[in-house]
Length: 202
Image (cartoon, rainbow, N blue to C red; front, side, top):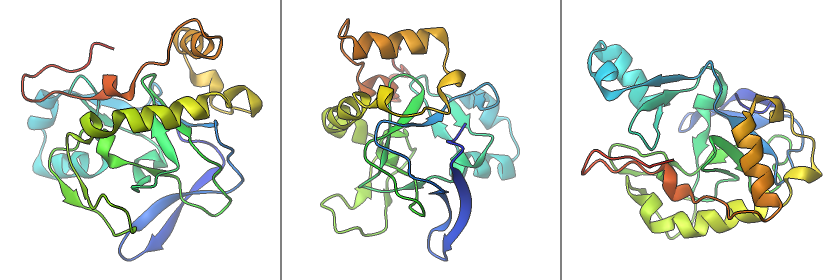
């Protein structure tokens, strides 16, 4: 489920629709949680679908560390890519704002950690990276982990409308990190290893 202080808007002809903040979403806010209405589909299930459905899965779903496709039921599936994304995923099936997101600003992800099937050239943002690759997580997980870790420290400072959707184990993991009982798990756990058919152990 996407953060409630967002709405779907048409951005432009190149981008299409996107998810826009309707209020300030501070750094450290949980912006999306994998919930019970989101659909998880195995590769076998997707292969058995009609081509029209496969095309929709290819456009709107991401792949988790097990290699399964996750199709979000709400407008979270319209969150666009940015090499300077203001949200990042975590190893705990939720995303977090890594900086303040202003009203009217798009919520963005870095598609490099979504286990895409093939590379694509993204819209130019003046960044060194120009192309999103399926194995970007292997290259950038340390950078992303640092940004998520810094944002984690702010979780308790803000109202968290999505907190009630987290499971007891997710709550326990967050508290363990915040209290210093154990280190934050790396985003690398979300990477799918297609070469040998093995996903993460998380």
